[in-house]
Length: 424
Image 1 (cartoon, one colour):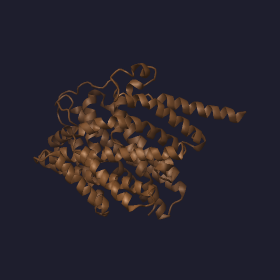
Image 2: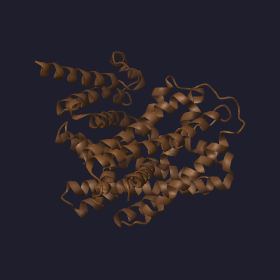
Image 3: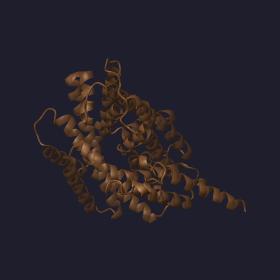
């Protein structure tokens, strides 16, 4: 396979990797709330849900390693703790959310059955597939993504030419930063760090390309995949904004269903629901399997550890997955406020030239990010207003991004100090 063809194969793989079915419910509702500021919110969402995840893949291309390699420059202990936290969050939030999305889009509108029963049956099947690996899901996945994209493009193209009421004003205080924070909910930066190595390993196994060729291919493929994601996300955000002055909706899945029904009718909406349910299922199996594989690797390839982890992951899935999508998204916010800043910093440091990202830079910038993320994390667990005095001294803290400037200052100061020290 030549480089050009391989590049497009990688681009499709990356697009499928980040285009999670659960993510579809986020952009329309974001645009719906942003109203006239839909373009600004798109830029913020694209930064955290497209650019950062693609950079994570590029970071893997440079490292040629695993999730542990992403944080090893801080310390091996930190890398292990970080990896454990990432997998714990993945199996506790985005995995159960797939069951909730499936229920609200494909089951609840057509059948009278409780979400707990659906979640139980759903994760029982996830466990079966996780314990008995098969290529069926990967084969299904190759057809699911193109079909979902085709339907979404129809919804977007038809919907954008529909006559609706004037677009309302944004409900956000800062549409750009709210777009960034909503992009956290895709979990794609974490996804890029966790499974990005799969792309690199797949290329290495072919043995046809050298290091520089692989880097170049992944960079070009990342750009193509990112462009595709931006088109879909941007279209859904614009469509949500277009309907912001027409309907009153407080539910993400209801809005996506409404947009689908208004453009494709009931049959198209039902078909979309089925496809989304299948795509969600493959995502859940991937998360449970990936987490179990990680624990298995930590326990000297213990199959028992793999099985126990898969079972626990599915039990958590049942316990959390029967709640509504809105509840799970709200519950995820504190965890994301803690893990996402660290993940973003690790991704950015890993794509920089080594002379600017020494182990000392990794340690200081990561620790700085961790410290200044604490107020954003703690605000959800302490009485309202009790952290106002602290947060008032931290720039961007009111936007829940108080870590950005301190991390940047730490990075610049360390590199200037290193430059001065070298000159002397």
